[in-house]
Image (cartoon, rainbow, N blue to C red):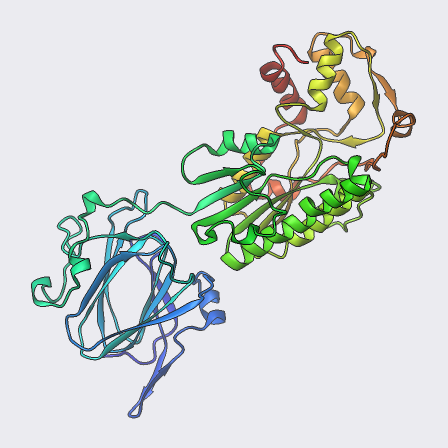
Length: 476
């Protein structure tokens, strides 16, 4: 019998993410009324804002009708419109809780939130029973489902009415035992721009198991008009955008301007739309170039954007686009060094070849190595840090490019005095082609990042390790 007057509330179960809900039902001799789904109240009470897109109703006219055990690749919120059901849920997701069982009776005053990959089965305990479920993806014949036999001896579900006495479909009778079930894989993380320096560092940090997918531009181009339909996005949980147009000087040309805006702004807007429509987390890597460098203190995440050149302007536009996704991390970094061609490798090569460089000394910042940037991104995701914008660079004292060059010379066993300091204007005075304006102050405040429990490595220490491990051979 339906209980009237319950307060809205939740009860965690032994299956992670499976949550039982009490629903307020208001009734009298005429019947009853309830708010079966009330987003504002339920989200405030702790229900995931899972974004339902489809409403289904299952009606069973006979007591004992039994359906399941089906695990779908979407979340669902199940409640009863009339009658009463016995529900059984089995965790069929890959992980330590695989095979966990939870059972409960549902009437109009009780509902349950079933996360993706948890198998569900229902047995009617009253005639003319109808139960309703909201799901956050449209049914698709190509979706991947996982099934378990209703009579599996391992999970040993205590069915109120023996299975031999109830109506079951032939398909449900034919489902495999638990020992033969292939667990449902978790949603995947897609790394875009996977062939670049940061993309390679992310692969080294995250690994190559099937939770992660790495896409170079040939595999997934954010500027392609079909990008929004290029994947079954509900199979993903996170997109990390490690790709960008970074030719800051070429961006000042007509062709470069178009390419920079396509990749750094329009492409990011596409990713943000994908993330918003499919409830994904978007990680977007940004740049110190979104600021003009005139601040006399380190830049905070909430400082006004003030880009100087086309590259910076396109990156600033990308930041604004990424922030339209409800679940986003905009990660601003500076002076990035990874494997492959970079400033440190170039200076080491010049030192070895006896060339004495002129290096600018009026731009200030901190080095950020791609392995540290990848480690920080992983931390934000795994720690479930509040969504938003975070500065992520190396820590320690601010330095100049000339100081970095001298450190490279010294750490490589060469005379640091061979490096001559010049101004930015002097350095580019004889440039043959367009020159993008550079921010003179690229130091980013790390206080907000530290508040999440992540402390970046000192840039000087990271430089020593980089030279030792990556440039021990031929630095050219």
